[in-house]
Image (cartoon, rainbow, N blue to C red; front, side, top):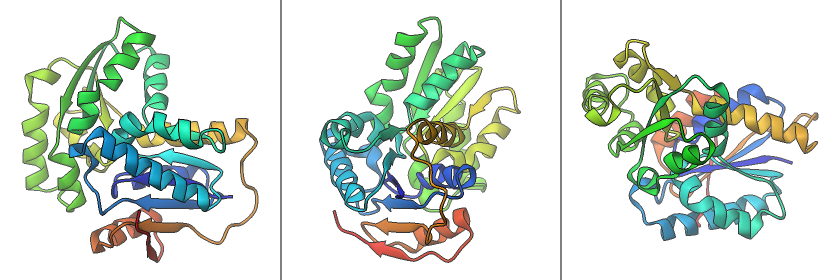
Amino acid sequence: MPIGIFDSGIGGLTVAGAIHRILPEEQLIYFGDTAHLPYGDKSPEAIRNYSLNIGRFLLSQKCKMIIIACNTASSHGYQALIKDIGNQVPVINVIDPVIDELVKLKKHHHVGVIGTKSTIQSGIYASKIARIDPSMKVSSMATPLLAPMIEEGYFDNQISHTVIHEYLSSQKLKNIDSLVLACTHYPLIKEEISDYYLGKVDIINTAEIVAKYVKAELERLELTNSLAHKGHRFYVSDYTKSFEKSTRLFFGEKIHLQLQLI
C-alpha cells in the first residue's frame, strides 16, 4: 500500500524527496494541486475543501497514510481531514513533528518562523510552542513572495538573493537563534537563507524532520513495506512543465504526470 502526499505545488516534493531517501522501499503517490496554487492567499474554507477532496482521492488510491506536505493546509485542513478520514488511515501534518523536535532539542530560545500569509495569520506555531514551552520566544513573519518565486524557478540567483535579504533583514526577525521554514517550498532556498545568516542561525530542515517522523510512525503502526513496488505516481490538478521538471530533479527518473481534477 502506498503513502499519499499532497501540497499545492512543488513545495511538498521536498518532503516526498526526504521520505523517498529514508524509506526507498515505500511507494509514494504525490498530488500537486497546481490548479489552486498558491494556498497561502486562499481562505481557510477553500483550503479545507481542497484538503478534503485530495485526501478522499488519495484514500481511494488505497493509501495507508496521508501526509499534508504543506504548512498552510496543515494549519487549516488537518482537523477537517482527521474528522473525515482519520478513522480509516493515519493523517500526518508537517507542523507538529517540527514543533516536537524544536522543544525536544532544548537549545533554541528565540525561534523565528517564516511562511505564507495564511500560515502566519493562523498563529499555529506560536500558540502550539507556547502550550508546550512558554519560555521559548517566537517571532513570526509572512513572506508571501517566496513560494511563488520558487514555483517559477527563481532561486539561487540575484532575484532570490534580493527578496530573501529584504525579508530576513526585518526587525521582526532580529536576534533569533533559529529559523523555522514554515513552508515546504522553502527548503529549496535553505542554503541561500543560511548564507544570509553566515551560519549563525540554525535553519530548521522541516522536510527531514517530517520524514523521520513518518518512518517512526510507520514502524510503530507496523505499516512498513518490505516488497518491491512498481514506482511512484504523480498527480496534478493542472499540468505545468515546471512541475514535471522539478519532480524529475527530486526523484532522478522519468516522471509521468497524471491529470486529476478535484
